[in-house]
Length: 116
Length: 143
Image (tube, rainbow over all chains, first blue to last red; front, side, top):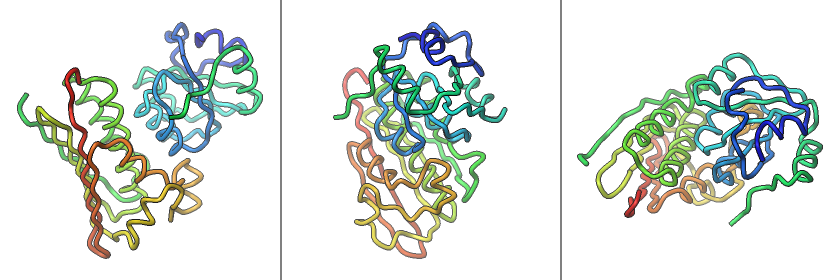
């Protein structure tokens, strides 16, 4: 699913990386536990999280996450956005909760990552 | 390809810079043109090790060595050492504080994940002296 379609489905705002909205993501992963993101995500994934510290971007960078969608209306600080921009990452925010956002995107065909 | 080595000093509790060393490592591997799968494994293992040094240790270093056959990561710290390494290697076991957990870490996945990302993993810990981890990722044809 393209980021621009995801944005429309969950009424998200773009915080940075609007030039990447045509990027296609294969999977989504929702978690506030960055340790789990590192353990499970396998690339070409959209990360849904309510955590807004710089380690979210660092974790995404290491795990090849292509875009981050903050849920529950969270907006990170400028340092976090700057770090995302440095890493050519699109960052979006939606007012929906993690559960609702996941439900909407799943019903539109965006699947979770497959575990080994 | 000649052997390449980079050293990164990691400070205790430096959450602002935590991840910078691993980010540099990832960029170096990309510049060398390695395959994205091995870059990802090295980056994740290095980042888990870096976060462990920031969170749990009195400071230390991450060293990366690249030779034609493999990528090796050395994560060494100046203590305090791990009391029970076997227990620390168990998924879900963690001694991290609530503050660390609020940052999204301390789920007890770090060491097991480092092992999972490595083809060869060794850990030695001496109380009051430090913890010494060596992780090797072997390059295959096409990496």
